[in-house]
Length: 515
View 1 (cartoon, rainbow, N blue to C red):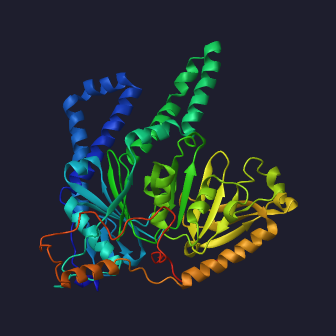
View 2 (cartoon, one colour):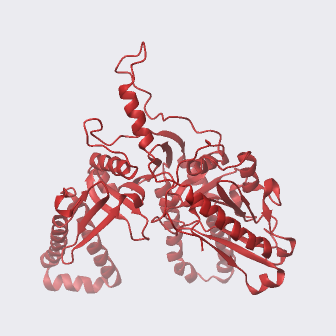
View 3 (cartoon, rainbow, N blue to C red):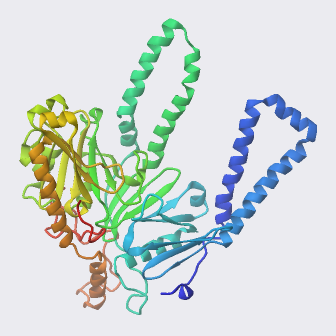
């Protein structure tokens, strides 16, 4: 479809007001900083020129910022066709961004607190094109944002609509799977490694300050304390009320206290999964699950890459099942238990040789890997346990790393290169010959998996089921108004780690090879 035939639309007219308050906030912060530095000078300025001119200057700055926001809104428009989403922005310099639907990695509906009060939402499309490749449509009415989300997911999945048979994009049902209570979230923060470091630092500081009486040192630590408080508040507010659901259009995640975020990650878009357990979580058997998705965040604080902030082993395995329903092994639960808390060669894991004790005296018996028909599993860590799972077709490339000490000991490390994210798949300190064999074996498995992967059209089955339902004769005794229970999908998830024999078709860059 040519650009002249596109139906361009504008974002909500209240958008300048939602964005404009930031200008006022910045002005007030600057004034507060200047006044706090020199109160006497601020008083002299007010006495010299009067209060009214000062207020007028502030109002003028806010007016200019608001006017620019209105002009930016007038110059912003977007359009959607069967192939892509187009966004035009810019006042002095015009810019058009195009997000191809076949490259969409995830679609988020974000509601900052002011937008939530006004019933607005931002639609954010993450595409496979780097950290700054997201296309943001801000702001839309919440109902319009949800409707557009369904439309874009349906188009990306290959579902045709807009005809008499399918006038609108299908709304996929969902089944809630797990949620994180606030008490558990607070408990996980209290029992985290940063808390342990803070406590140790506070005790050490008390031992130093009290005998010496160096009270000035406490004043210098105020910024550090504010940073720690910001870390805890960020984790709590972003992961508050975390819920996950299974749907034919992808993995649905909802979370947020002040800023509400509803994420939808289509099937096959997850590149790698990591399950982590800190030392203080071991008694409760809590786990944290993170994922790599092209375009999502790269740091620990980026909640967009979190599939489960904190949960039981059962919930963590359910989260893994959402990404990879079939591990390709006869006894997946035993394999996963060995991967999460085992050591040595349990369930076919290949671990580091004994000579690696010189490089990793604590974890050499646990560091290892296992290969199944569907995925590569790498476990590591004695005090902080980690399990990384990478579907074979998601392997971007492989690397063999061997430092001088490793060469002398006859060991090497293997790295699986994934998209940027919090998950870094590595297998440290393996036997050198075994590491070379692993690189060749995994490269072969990755090529084979990608060759058998078809196009991503995961909602065609949903459309076919809907069409069959419309044409099927009614069940005797069931009236026409009867409908299935809301939120119930086609089947319940099996025991974690045991999935259907036909996993969802993976998506990703076709034709790429392993280096």
